[in-house]
Image (tube, rainbow, N blue to C red; front, top):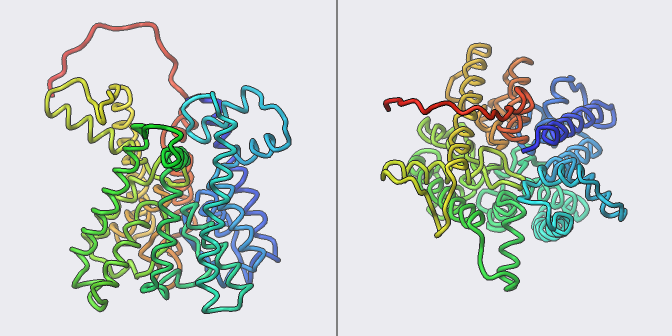
Length: 440
C-alpha cells in the first residue's frame, strides 16, 4: 500500500465532496433553505455511497439537485481516480507508472499486469448491469407513473442500488413496494453484484465462459461469506421479528422483507420496513453485519468480508494449535491474518469512540447512535429514522453530523488507508530484537 497514492485517492474523494456540496448549495439544486452542513452531509453520503439523509431527496432537491446526487453516487462508487484514469485511457493517452499505481490502489487490483484491460472490462460491466437494472425498474415503475418519470426513477434507483448507495426518489424509500416481487429481487441483486467487487464479477463471468478453469481463493471467500452473511441475517431477522416488526405480514411477505433487509444490512440503505420497530437485539446484531460490509474492490464499505473470513480462519487454526492456516487448499500468510485482526481492531475503536462521543454530545439512546455510527462507517445507510422520512442523523447537532461524515469518509476510503493518511506509514527498520516471552 503506497502512502502517496493513498493520500491522492483520499484527496480526490475529499475534493469531490467539496465540489458536490458547492453544486447542491446552488439555488437551482434545492427547494427552500439548505444549510451548508446539510449540503456537505448529503454530498458526503452520496460520494461515500452511504444513503444516510438529513434532507428528503425527493422533496428537498430539484431534478438538477437529484442529478448531482446521482452523479456523485456514480463517481464515488467507482472512485474519482478510476474515472479520471478511464477518461485518459479512452483518449488513447498512455498511462504513466504513477497513474497505474493510483489505479491499482483505487481498484484494489493485485498487480500491474493487465490493469488497463481490467479497467475497460470493469466499465463495460458497470454499464451493462446498470442498464439491465434500469430497464427492469423502469418497466415496473411505468405501471405507477408516466413513462418519462418512470425512466428517471428506474435509472436513479438502478445506479443507486448497484453502487450500494441506498438513495431513493421516494420519500418513504421503497416501503410502498414491500410486497412487490420485481423490486424485491432486482434491487437486492444489483446491491449484491456491486458489493461482490469487480474482480469477483469478472472472474465468475470468465469461469462461466470457460476462459478460466478455476475460481480464485479470493472470489470463493467473497462468495461463500456473502451467502452465509445474507442467510444468517435473514434467519436472525425472521427469528427476532416474526411476532414483532413482521407480525402483520403473511409468511411470504415476511420472507421477502427479511431477504431485502438482510441484503441491505450488508452495504446499502434501502428499506421496505420501518427499522425503528425492530427489537434492540436485532438492531445490535445488525451492527455486526453492517460493520462487515461487502467485498473489496467494489462499491461496498465496511471492513470487508475477506477481512472477517481471514480473522475467523486465523482464530480457528490458533484454537487448534496449528501455525499453517489454509482454506480451499491454499495457505494463508500470517501477515494477512494479522492485518485482518488489525483492521477489525481499528474499525471497532473508530466506531466505539465515535458512538461514545455522539452519545455524550447528543444525549440520544446509545443503541440507536451505535446503529447509526456503524451504518455510516459501513457506508450502509439503513437507519432507525428521525421519526419521519429522514435518517436518525437528522436529529444530530452540526458537530454530530460532522462526526457521521468522518465515519462515512473513513468507511469509503478504507480503515487502513484512512489511518495511513492521518498517522503516516511506518518506516521499515533493519533492527531486529530478541524475542520476548509474553504469557497469554
